[in-house]
Image 1 (tube, rainbow, N blue to C red):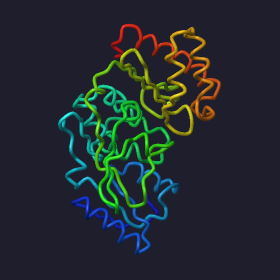
Image 2 (cartoon, one colour; image 1 turned 60 degrees about the vertical axis):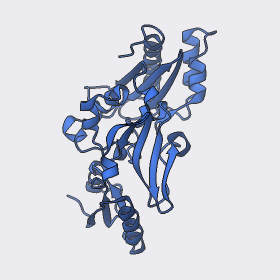
Image 3 (cartoon, rainbow, N blue to C red; image 1 turned 60 degrees about the horizontal axis):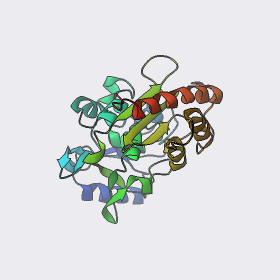
Image 4 (spheres, rainbow, N blue to C red; image 1 turned 90 degrees about the vertical axis):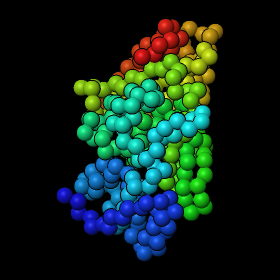
Amino acid sequence: MIAVDFEYYQAFSITEAVGMFQRLRNEGKSPIFFNGGTEIITMMRMNKDYMDTRAVIDLKTIPECSVLEFQDDHLVIGSAIPLAQLEELRIFPLLRKNCSRIADHTSREKITIGGNICGNIKYKEAILPLLLTDCDLVVAGKSGVKQIPINQTFDQQVNLDPGSFIVQILVDKQWIDLPFVSKKMTRIGRIGYPLFTVSGIQKEGQVRFAFSGLCEFPFRSSDVEETLNRSDQSLEKRITEAISQLPAPLLDDIYGSAAYRAFVLRHVLEESLLELKGDGNGR
C-alpha cells in the first residue's frame, strides 16, 4: 500500500512535460518524472523515497521518448524504452546482456532504460555500456533541449537540473558490435541484486571497464583502465594495482563482504582480460 496521495499526469510533448513540471513545482507538489515507475512505487510502499511527491508526470506518451532506431551513424534509444525490448531486439549486444539480468522478465517489461540509469537504486547496471561507449544524452529542461556527453553529466549518478529529463540516448554505431564481456556475480541465483557487475569492451587492443555493485555507485575509471592496459607488467600485478585504484571503498553488506568482493573481482578481471585480449569474442 502506498501511503502518499499523488496526482498522475501524462505529457504528450517535451514542451508540455517541462511546463507541467514547473507549474506543479510552483504549486508545491514536488513533482517527479515517471517512466516505468517501478522504483517510485516500490520506494513509496516502503516509505523510503519520494515521500514528499504529490504529483508524477508520465513521459511514456512523449513520442521522442519511445524511439528505438538507427539514425545516420547513431543508435537512438528513447528513455521510455523498456529493458525487455532492448533485450529482445538484440541491436546492442552488450546493453542487451546487461539488461537481461536486471530483475525478472516481468519487471523488465516495465523498467525503462531512463528509469534505470536515473533512479536512486545504486546498481544502475544499464548505464555501464553507456559509460563505455561515450554516448550522448539528449536532455530536455526549461533552457531547451541539449545533447550532452554522458561523461560530462555523470558523477556517481546522472546529474540533471531540476525539471530536466533524459529524452534519448545516442550511441555511435562504431561501439555497438565491439568484443565485450558482461559478468554479473551473485551469491545465489541468476537474478537479483548483484555482488557486482563488470562490463568491458575492447577496441584496437585497448580495453575499457565499467563496474556496478563494487562501490556505492557505478563507475568507469581512467586510472583503472590505464593500469589494466599496461603491456609491460604481469597480469597479476596489473589487477592488484587496478583494485587499489578503485574510486571508493568496496561495499561490505549482506550480499558480500569487502574482502569477498575483492577476491571475486580479482578472478573476474583476470578472466575478462583473457577473453578480451585473447580470442576476442567476449561472449
